[in-house]
Image (cartoon, rainbow, N blue to C red; front, side, top):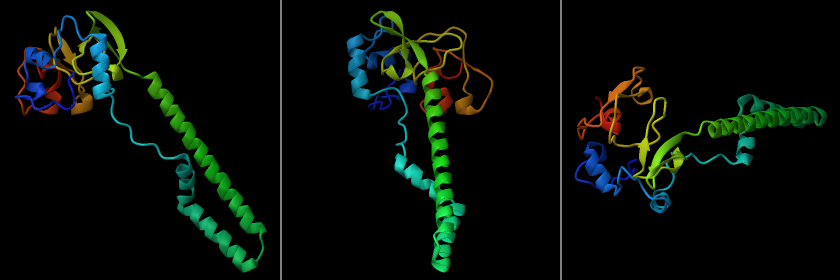
Length: 206
């Protein structure tokens, strides 16, 4: 795994030869990081995940239910009815309907968010990492700069990285390029400094 803030090396991380990349990251590919060093780097760099947008406060989510144009019209109608007729029955009935509609919308949104959170928990990406000289399974967000990751057929690429060795490796890059065809990767391929984003990680095109 590569750090996100490459501190001004002579070449960009994606253009470094594998041996130079591991040297800069101070890791022996055959042993990997020690548990203590990995913990230190995790504390320094934070988890390997994208920052999440701050969640909308629940009270604001509830008040947002009243921003619909139809709801505003109903509330105005309730006020006009009260002023004109001086009776409370109709305005109260409209207010109850509006409040009920807002409550239903708020509950539905809350359930949808809870379902999405549960789905995220079920689809956590795991990675096979070499640490302390042995292979272990970790959640992808526990990866740190310098981790040596092993990929097997069907694995997801859990982080930015530089290929050290490869054998008939093909990567599905549709998320980056939109192309459905898998692309061959070669650890020995040289990657230009100005290579397109899809060709920067994992050794570039083979």
